[in-house]
Amino acid sequence: MYNELKERDKAVNWHPYTQMKTAGDAIPITHGKGVYLYDNEGNKYIDAVSSWWVTLHGHAHPYIARRVFEQLNTLEQVIFAGFTHEPAIKLSENLLQLLPDNQKKVFYSDNGSSAVEVALKMCIQYAYNQGKSKTKIIAFKDAYHGDTFGAMSVSGRSVWTNPFKNMLFEVIFIDTPNHENIKDLKKQISNIAAETACFIYEPLVQGSAGMVMHQAEDLSELMKFCRQQEILMIQDEVFTGFGRTGKLFAADHLSEKPDIMCFSKGLTGGTMPMGITTCSDEIYNAFLSDDKHKTLFHGHSFTANPLACTAALASMELLLQKTTLSDIHRISEQHRQFTDILKNHPQADKVRQTGTILAWEYKTHQKTSYFNEIGKILHQEFLQKGVLIRPLGNVIYLVPPYCITSEELDFVYNTIIQIIDRKRI
Ligand SMILES: *Cc1c(COP(=O)(O)O)cnc(C)c1O
Image 1: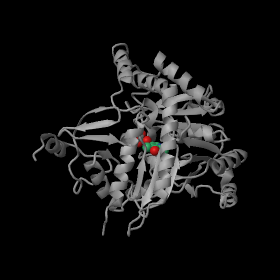
Image 2 (image 1 turned 120 degrees about the vertical axis):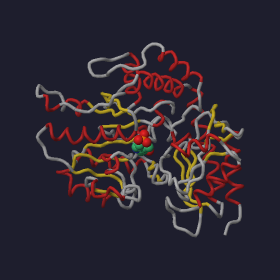
Image 3 (image 1 turned 90 degrees about the horizontal axis):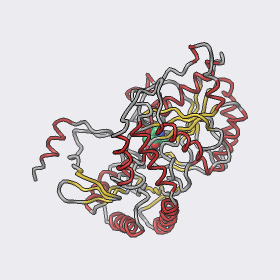
Image 4 (image 1 turned 180 degrees about the horizontal axis):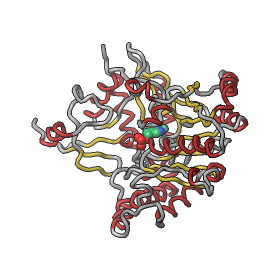
């Protein structure tokens, strides 16, 4: 059937992470409400991946909408160099209160990749400002920290970064920690500690790698060692922040504190683009000087945009409500029960869960990878049943908005079972 929006979209839009030659039509979404997205042909879909992991409280949340509308009529934007505004002050105050108590200053940008760029520049210049030459960076294998050049450099080398590989700076990649390898990891780190500026990591869950998880106690031990070796730690909570792991932040599972933290995705409840990089006073103080060369020369046109700050304030209010915190708990518990079913399912392998994040591998003859063809097929089949799930290759995962009800979640689980039960060749 001819669908005008689909045709017009094809004529002008280039979609992210999409091979435009072979991709089918993009589905025109006309509106969203709560956990549902509605297309222009009258179909509705449960958004079980929170629209790329950003939507915390459901779509078109009326409270966030009202707050942003009021702000839009008051102050929509102001240059943040030499000027400030209450939404940015209040958001920084409120956020810092929830973070490890060494986090003291907030630097604004507009997406997760930029928040990571800022963090990396803070670490490198922290050394530079003290006349030290520390330029090595450590990251986890298969990490994902974003798509700008610095963020790509600290991400695992893959098909995503191949065309640029000669232009990415050198990074030392280590395995994620477990009981067996922790000694070896420490040895690798201590060999290069003197020249190392920082260690950047996704805490507990490596999202884009396929929701690969490691244990809080092992990461804490690794962090403790980095602290002893005077290696700065950048904790990228762009994905794990704001309740995803069952606690407000992945930091709440860990016994050690990072020097720098990055946030985006759920920060505004998924309503507006914004990035935040927070840091300790130790980092911040290294940039205080009468020498102008020690300034952090970084900023974006929309740094601390008042609308985005207001959306974040409203979203955080909703997040801290007792009902939302119990929703997070409820979803985590319901996921846990579903893992028992999956673990006994012949098509499911490596079932894993951290809080509201549930993932497993769908068994196929192809190996587990982003290019495993089954992902696309399953994605289409889920859509036909009214559920938006976007597997990473053959890794199927759920990251639902916190407003999803038990019944809706059961519907998602039942749909999954129906589809993975299907006989395939
Ligand atoms: C998504 C993501 C980023 C990049 O954020 P964007 O807003 O997409 O640029 C960085 N780090 C992690 C851990 C992410 O999941």
